[in-house]
Length: 549
Image (tube, rainbow, N blue to C red; front, side, top):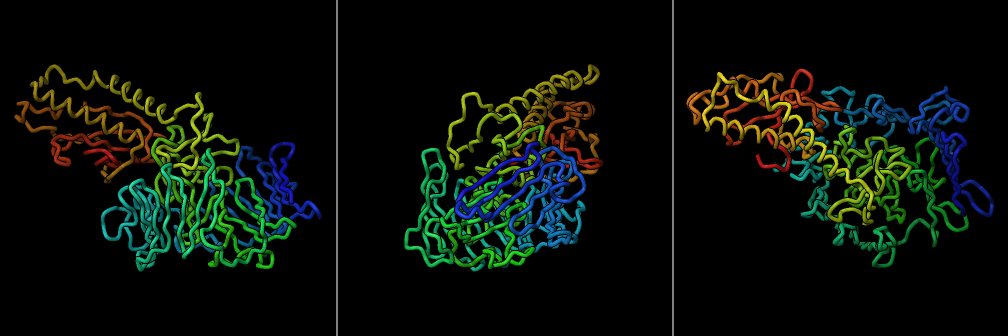
């Protein structure tokens, strides 16, 4: 059997075929269209040469999938047609932070009970599915940690996975935020996972079977094997060959003589299209739903292993839910977040919600077809702390984007501080005692800390809505307190007002900070609280994630 791949002359089409070397029969084929696809697909001319996949033709079925995008290049629509007849469709809606939900009103494709759905794309509907911290919430659960119905732990890892708290699976993590155990709703262990010192999964125990994984020196998966004899399967090939698409997803498994053992097609975020969808049948070797029986074809979406016990895909550093179209644990801040790419600040989203041209080899960084992890990257993204399946050392000339972003934000803060220094000085007609000046200095230092906390991507621990962006004329300290004179009027000129700075909170782009004073916040007298502008209202950031109040 031979895998053939070629591209069109203008780079706007791409063909992938799996053929039988002896008979030259096409076992599977995929035609991708990126630009003017009218001639090939019979559609009206569409010119969008920005790299997005517009259509995909799947052979031998002959069905055509069409895709739509918003101005942020996020996938908003997929439909599959046999001829002119639509077989199924999915429409996706997003909130301002890039959280995804399926529009249940217009979508006809079956979805699982863990898929976030809304009846429309309104802000109110989306806030019900994602009430805070970019975390989806199921029925009866909360996104806050520490309570009996928490769906997440305090590190942001999803600990309940299901439709509701009564039936959800329980996900257990170790101290390094690695999934180590899965329990059912009755608290019975259904799977355990073991990792080596570099964070790679080396053993999986599930359903009475033990799977061991071996890695090459460069960190790539070399082999896997069952500790005990393999149970009987419905696949007959002794040596099985995997045919993949442009994303590396397994689409066909065949024996050496060309006999097709399995076929797999996918919805954009990795959900499988089973027998019964658009003419797919079991006789064609499509599975009927999610096969409950043991199946050696565990390598599925983008070449990642799918665990039958959860349906989650193991991406190395994290696990991804194709049903939810997102990761179950947050990314490491500043590893794949960039100030000129607002959608990157959602630490749960999968490849900026554009899964047809990007992949995530390590679970830490999106990767384009050109092998780059960001527009200006020169080398691979290696997750810190050995939590990635990639252990290749960084190339000497590779740019350290985390350090660059931090340095740039520090420079921005310093320049903003210099610009505000003069107007922050007390007026001559408002002399301050030494103690009052010290108090004001502490407030400014606190301001810089809070700015850095937000700007450098630590996230927001708690926040509440306030009515306006105006600085509230409230005394920082009452008259006679330590300084002997009120400094309320000084505070009205204090703080770096109007400072535009990138932030994961608010609309994509930058937000403007304003400030108010408070006599008591977290036991600290006179602490400044930053506001992140959201139109006519604002969020008051009470505490930065991972920082002391």
